[in-house]
Length: 116
Image 1: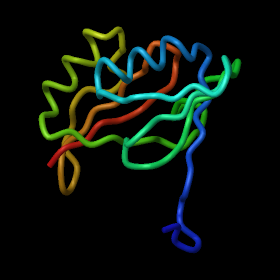
Image 2 (image 1 turned 90 degrees about the horizontal axis):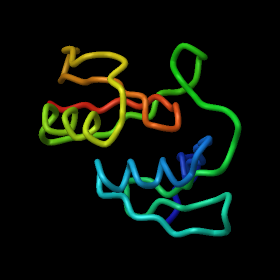
Image 3 (image 1 turned 180 degrees about the vertical axis):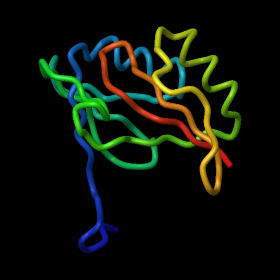
Image 4 (image 1 turned 135 degrees about the horizontal axis):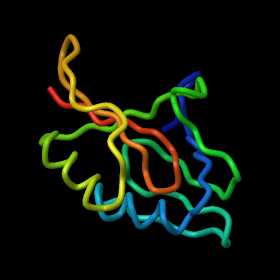
């Protein structure tokens, strides 16, 4: 059931849908359903949404929102990000309530991963 005034759907630009899909499938186990060559929905990742072909990327440096993922094993996830071709943009650091790192996925978008 959709809740009134809540974030319901997330659309993420990517310069390379194929690379983004492969990266998120390899590192996080995401599955996708394609709707043509320029749009793909991610399935069962905590929020409904999709990625779409665009000639832009998003980073904190550009003032874009940060999408933060959760991991039970932060160091293992960091290693998987690197092994799948991601770049660590901010090494693991502590904050009240946990630790996190930031990474750039192969299509150039910045994300973060946190853990307790």
